[in-house]
Length: 503
Image (cartoon, rainbow, N blue to C red; front, side, top):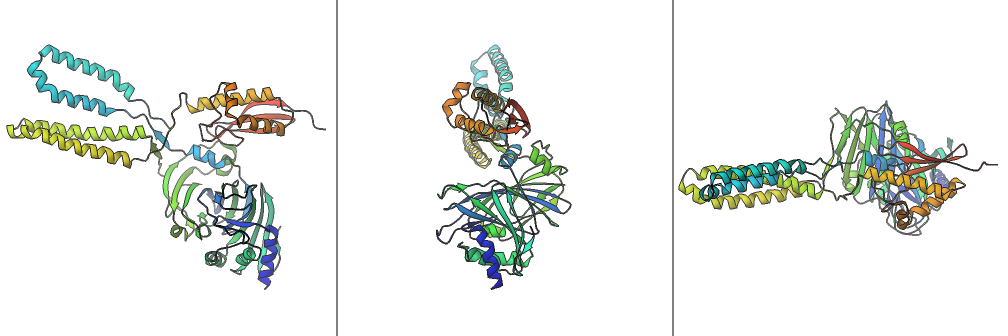
């Protein structure tokens, strides 16, 4: 009973919230609904037994109030993370897009055609004509190959009872957070159910295991304006705690949840690996983004891990293991690039086979009669090979721009500066509102000689966020600064305006 009273006390602080877990989302009893977490992005920085875990989780479900429950192996220090953190990581560790691939297959096909036609030319054409034809083809190839070989595009501690202890309570960004601990495995379950939250029964053994292992729980209050069953992405939170080995809590996430897509960025002394995850890339990057630079200082190696996890794969937490550094680049192909690579390989194999069959044809008259049939078989085999290679290569849809995206981004930033000059805002809030209204209408872009307000670096529309291609409005010393975010995540002051003195 003492446990239930303490749990009830804690839940009253969140009433009437549903519970969202790093891990798991629990809907309110009054509105039975299934809460699902389709994907998460996380950042782990680990050094000398201290881990910083930054989590951004999306969830879908009805309601306006939720609670985000995060199990951790130690009591954390909780900090706010900016909304631009993960878009910046995504851009910095984006795959290299291979689009313009040299079209060697064209030269190979021309050469095969000339070889095949050579007997006819020798029989019906003069020697001078044949020499001229070969010189002309050579000149044509010399002119075309440089163009065909264009470069690749990088597309306050207190105890309320002996059952549950409140270790900390604070406001972090838009969240109200409470850190609790208990030796009773039913404490968190009772806390949720007695205050109107439909915690699925299959989460009980997971919570019990965490309590048995001595883990604590951070519960954060999350609220959104619309009750629709839409996908929401609250801003990420940072948790810094002591642990002997870096870990990504996953057991509570997997309870009563469907498949989960995860992007995990790990900074440390070397490369990492984890069960069910594959290394998308590994490098020694130079980080300029102010917040990322602060958190990753002294950690030379960054590994991007990705996974599509089934519920069965989430029955255990993700413990990270260190491995020797080995650089790895993530590459994706446009459809054109993939097709060109496939055709290069297919025609290359066809050329080798064709030459072999051609030399055999000179061995005897019988072999010469078999030549057309062999060519037909080789054509079919190589066509199948082209299709298999094309299907096997990892592809992504690309959008070709007349100008490089970073140049267009600079033009948009200049347009923002001109817009603020025209709007002449008197306060920071007024400037923020007027810019948002300006960017909300695509037709306004034409007035600044722009096609649209799309962010061609990270996608979506230009917005106030600390990520590449976007901007920040910052007030300092009675001045308004327009801070633009560069392609490397660094900040640049595009303009400064004087504000009326505050009385």
